[in-house]
Image (cartoon, rainbow, N blue to C red; front, side, top):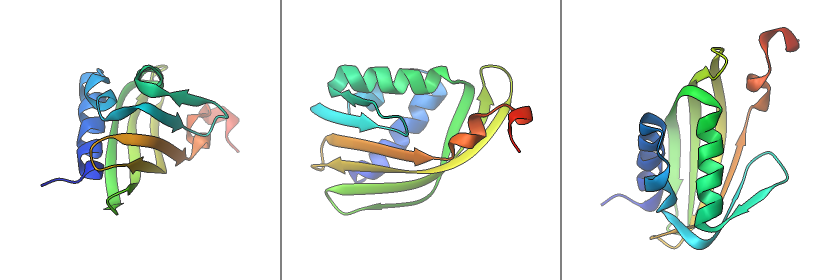
Length: 126
């Protein structure tokens, strides 16, 4: 039987393929929190929907490939590489780590850390 981290990774890839975050959002508890490199915190299922839709809206296409993962029964850690194309047509490939806190059934917290420089226009990189 898959642990919640494996289920989360599968749901994320399905969300990326379909463009519909609803299956992924269903993994989140009502009082959950989501954070990325910004200072904002999204809360609950509504926040999870906004978070994942905003994520998808950055890309014309995106696919997360997971290189490592672990699940302790209450924490999940995933190392990944995202590959795809931004809305402006620019190809993108970036790496990161995501952490979930969970009770085995629902995600109570999601945090993700990634190479934000990959989102800069090529001429802006030095």
